[in-house]
Length: 186
Image (cartoon, rainbow, N blue to C red; front, side):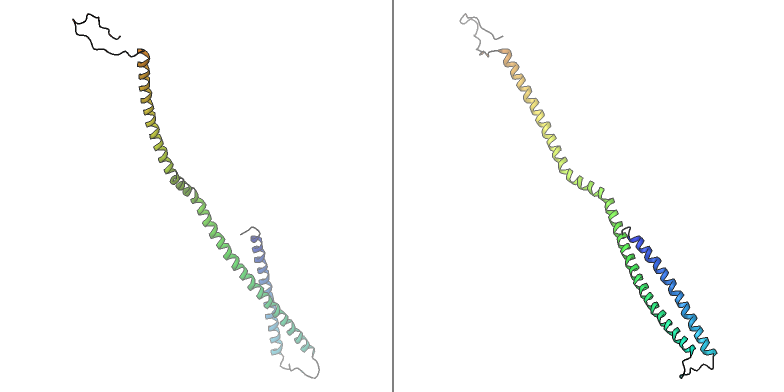
């Protein structure tokens, strides 16, 4: 419901209240007029209208009847307006209730959103975490292999750089043969 609807409802409510007060006032006037007419007719036993000459009381009575009809017509008009306004008020109350219910539902959804997002994020992050763990294991394995290869390469380079040339190992002569001195690798 917008803020402009609230003053409209209040204005309608005050207008209905005023119309009801006017209606009560007119009801009281009609009641008083009918009592006065009844008192005049009942209290006057000689009250027999003469048809030949127009009686001033008869013209007053006719004027009162016309006023009564006008008041009754206004009364019907005001009752119709009151009925229309009551219908409008009922519809407005229903729409206010529907909007209130919808607002509560939306507030609940808004309160639940962080939990839903956390759960969805966790669901999406689970495969990523698994992949990171696999990659870390592979990384450790590759690091170990790299260290092993580096160590072997270092050993190989150290042994090849110190010895210079690989000399063949000849079998040693048995003593007493050939008189050649034997050469040994350093």
